[in-house]
Image 1 (spheres, chains in turn cyan, brown):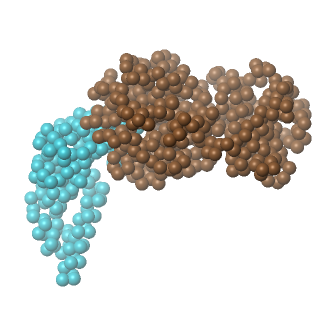
Image 2 (cartoon, chains in turn green, blue):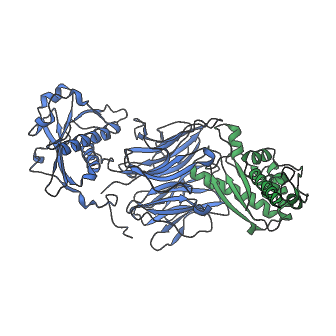
Image 3 (cartoon, rainbow over the protein chains, first blue to last red):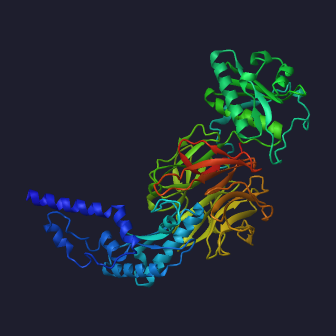
Length: 178
Length: 453
């Protein structure tokens, strides 16, 4: 019994580590989300109690990692724009589908900007981006009271570097599972 | 709240007995204003005035030490302004002790000093320091001004700044700005997890202290013109809202209870209101809140972004930033929000307008062709002049005399995470004398304290 308990703990620790590894989030988002559906429909909860190593366990359905794998957690914007792009629409549609499957999940929509604007204006622009993404989800049937917004302006870049690629990655709205 | 109290930043300021010793220091002999030695600081490239600041003499080792330290601070203040060229002490011919009665002007002319400062420090019977100084016109061989101050020992630095202000004022005709403080954001850590703390220091970088611990993201602090308070943005509990921090009590409280993000705060010139932006459903408009009645007034109602509002010093008008034309531009409207009118028409985007305390100019950040500038224009939009240029210059703040601007400059960041250094800089309104403001950590979002009354 002691051994069994330990292995469960090990599995949990590994899963937690996965969730908080920034590279994994960036990788999955970098491809604009994935429809590989890894683990999306598997009953991982029962696997979890049986697994010995944790490596075989996919993301817990309804978890933040599951959300990222299924839908992608972010959409990107053009410079000084808050228009949802075609790629962003596809991501938000998958997000809405996932959120429809887990109606108890609430989310925070973060709006972010690149460093090529002034601080105060970027706070307003980040709020616009978060609201634009939220409105899109609401239009697809996600209840409005499940989505709160917050703007970080240019204060929390995802990618470091004063270059176009970094700026493009930083102009984003990120859906965070609460 | 004692909002009407002025000059609050002289904490316990009753210490400062300022006396113009008309008889004792011979103010009656003051040279007439408009004599040869006057710096015209409206010109572009000013030749700094050669000035000799002698060590202030003291009878005891302690007062002599204060005297040397005070002279050093006065020299540094004057030098930093770019308008004065203090002469190296090593070249002085006359000993400071020998100047008790009157300088030997020939000795000072020989080392090309045009102005001369002499002074003395002594201990009063009540234990306080007495600091006196005289400013001399070396060529006219007359005293231009002389003042004496009495102060607690711990305040010797303030006295040095006051003396530098008096010298600056006598020689330029403008109010000084050395006895002031700067509130700013101290930065540390990598860009993705930047730690930002509210910090305050004297304008020369001394007496730095951190007001918040970095646990919450804080941005854009601004001084109250009338109370020991700072308004700023804090992400306390994950809700970005405008707060007011009281320097004396070290208490902070959110300003109002709004359904969305409040940001870009700034006090009104009388200190009674805070003007700020409120974002509701993604749309930012400008509001004021009366700090006593808590009454909220909406000044703009437009689907565009309206932010970065700043009152004219007479409170009659407000300049703000809006993208209602499609890109960020500057607009001026009445204090009630009426009749908004665009004033920026040059190429590029304009942001962070700040009305000069003299009322004659508006400073701003300009973005054009991938470069950032600090610039100024008249309130009607005419006379645009760019003072700086770099990868990222932002957020000008005026010295209380309206002659000098401070801002922050961020260097480009490399992919490796190197670079990105962010520091405070100052520049003269003429576009000359650009220099780094030394801070203990990297720094941004400076705001200059008002003129001390």
